[in-house]
Length: 251
Image (cartoon, rainbow, N blue to C red; front, side):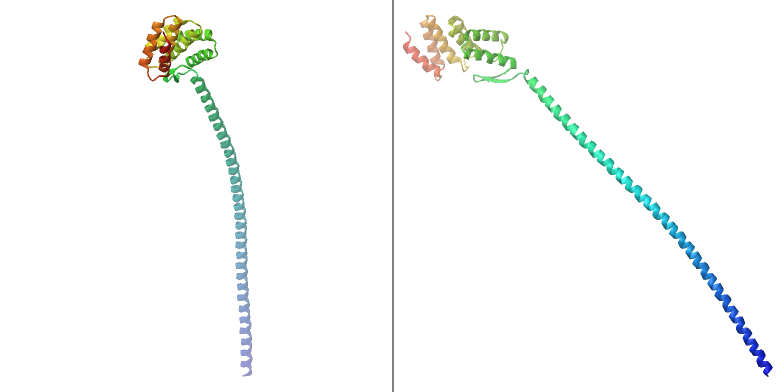
């Protein structure tokens, strides 16, 4: 009986020992598995960290490249703006220069182009040189240089026979000749004026001056006829009032 109990005890101890061995092996395997998993996890983590580091480095390089590109674009844009400003200034300067040149050319051309003028209530077109020559002759007359004025008006009428100044030029030429006591030529010019343009503003004065010339030529009969024609043709003119007074005194 005791022997059986001892055998049973030995078996129990053996089973327990085997169970302990079994448990240790399982534990070792579990530990090894866990260690392998940890090593694998650490390896993977290291790979991930390394990859992440490389990705971050690549991202930094990309960001740096992008930043450099942006800076380059900014510099290029600044240069383009500068060029555009310079171009704008150049274009503006060219336009100003062109405008000045155009105005200068226009002004020079206007010196030679015919233009409208108005003299003694009459409007017509005259060349600048023609206008200047007439005004110069008139200025000479007004200065009292009657001989030079006579020459200037005679030359003017020969040079511009169809001029719109003709009637006015004849009037002032006749006055210069009257002042020079060249009455016959003055009579001719005053008559030409009235015959050519009886409605001209200077026509009544021309008739009055014509009558004065006839008086100086000792031809009172013709002078009376001229004054009567003046009063009849231009009753409202100031020269007609003067003519009436002259008629009252004329014998």
